[in-house]
Image (cartoon, rainbow, N blue to C red; front, top):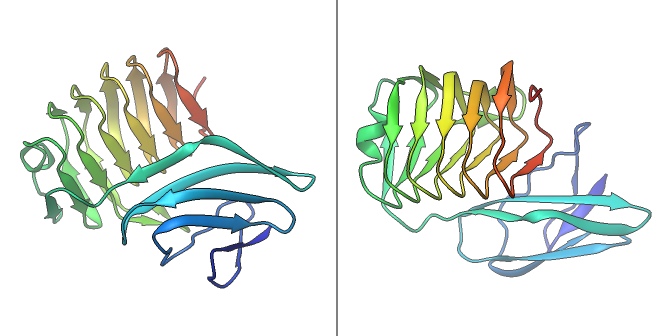
Length: 203
């Protein structure tokens, strides 16, 4: 499907329905599907948003509210082998992972931490965590990472998107899981108010 965002050049979704729109203006941004439109707010430059809509018979329907990945806190850039838990020692830290492998078997105890992995539309996640990850702090977000162990969380408002995860046990409330692949087919997501969109490998 072809659509236009604001005054930018039109873009085309791929066979899975995914499209990447770059250099969005701030303020109200309208997606024009001709016919049918959808609008959302872009708060700051260089932020990332996951916008999930369904299009049918000229009507655009919001599936989940836009997921915002704000770039407004402390940004820590890690190279392969870096200590993710140490980098996430403060609330609201933004961690940018370069492509490569990172040690796992750690806990995320602080709140509002955002972990950005390197991600390719063709290859998927390029930042690999070897081992388990336990999320204890609320409102943490991960995007574009590969976890070769188990992701465990009883925290509220966890958001994970575009990630490959071997297995998971998630029991917090208000969880959002968007286009993840659970590669061992062992994902338990019994949380209330969970939003699950386009994930694979959840029994």
